Image (tube, rainbow, N blue to C red; front, side):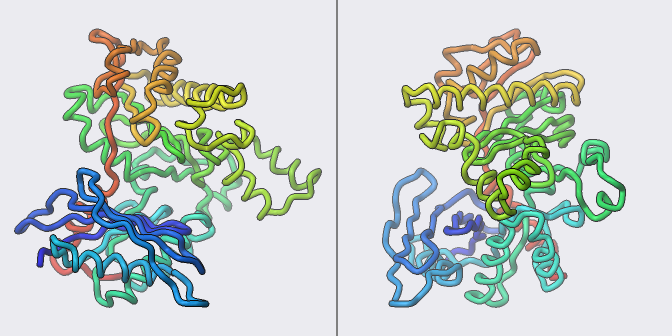
Length: 404
């Protein structure tokens, strides 16, 4: 039975996983990926596909009366399927996407009791994500005791930023407690940084702005393939307008909502995280950009225009941090697939020297700017799972990793 690394991305109602087999003494490419969803007191669902997208499994998970489909049951289902799968894959380690590592964790770490305690302590910094990351780690430990597990942090890539880029203008005691800009989507940016030379050549170490556009959206300014500045801050709510998240917001709006609308923290959290963004501005039409682009409704058009406008403003801000621009890179679900959005963004960035090649953009790139464009534009698919698998394999083979 072939050995393999399991990559885990756990959410509130689902677990996404990917499997990378070991080929001798090296890490192989993606073998399969899957999804176990519908956590709760209902019939769950398990699906899996191979690296080319061909469906390998598609089945319901029955629960007994009164039984909850929890993370533990989900992992047991996925691991059992992997061992019975025709490839016969035996998981020897797991790597987890963990949203928040704060200041302490700038690089991936093998998970032990001390790390788990710290991850739980950080839950208030990412209350909608971190609890599910922690629950998945604990559940997998119950299903496969002794299995090495590695935490890979979405905040880690941005720890290279200068202190000024991470600071809020708050009293020093609050800053000392950890109230600062952390940034997210770091695993995606790390992957893009690793492959930039394959696309940009000598420009890879120049002034690059990467746009990770999806249901969650952010941007990162890179120089020498390191994070210089990013649009997300203390939480994954800041910065760009997103599928259901508002992005950058005047703090005075929150005071107004509390004082005049008598909204408590729970109601405000629901509003800002789940009812705003594309969904809110479109009047509830959709949070999915594909639907909005296909909808002939002025409200959908206004949501799209605001999405692009906010991106254009942030491009200007990040270009100022970089003192110019050499390349724009689009990634994420919207960035990789929505040619209309790319066209609108590139047109808004013409003042920085971007000249769109329309036929190339319609084809999806990878280069979508004209030859001779002062600043080039690219479409580069991201691969966060590969980054997590590589870190997990590296730590697994760094001797006998201690669990702190």
